[in-house]
Image (cartoon, helix red, strand yellow):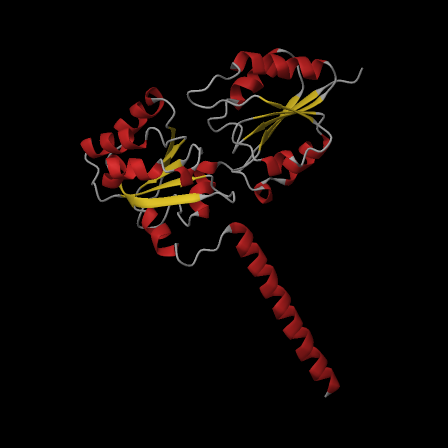
Length: 281
């Protein structure tokens, strides 16, 4: 029996265009895909020959334990299968990819890590928000909003306005985080944004201030049905002003690609016509 192999693959923020070429290749050749909650159906469709098995975790819902997932990976590989462990974003950014890698290594299973585009950077960028920007922020801090024990020690030790704050899986904790930052000296007018389902057709963006984020008004508006069930990414800092300035002119990812292609085709046609006219003369 042939030896199995496991690829820990980052699926990016959702749009298949943002997959790496390596990730696309592993999905095409996969026999089994164990995928997370935020992996899009469009990305899963790129594994046409694979059995697909959902092992995602969502806050407040029953889910498979990490130990069980580890055992599934090891067992499938020992049976000679080509396995893709597919994670939203990057496997090593709040994805427990490190735990799975250690489990595979301890079991003597061959594996690799295929990095992905993390939503910590991609979600803000798609909304026109750079996590660093000259004159506004020279550093950024990324925390998980899922558990106060994860974000509180980091944010409470961060001097006010010293870095951009990116909170992943943060919609449920956004109000508490904003209130804590204000209590520690952050200005209530500090720009803030909440980005839901970034890079997907259902993407939603809210922009306001840290005071808005701490208030009930922002909390209720962010829970409207139109924002769906996405975990959301919160960005806090002066860099959000860049996104506010670009909001009117920034095209969505797919639209930008289409427009760029159309423009290139138009320019090529114009150049070709000019060459033809010159030759005729």
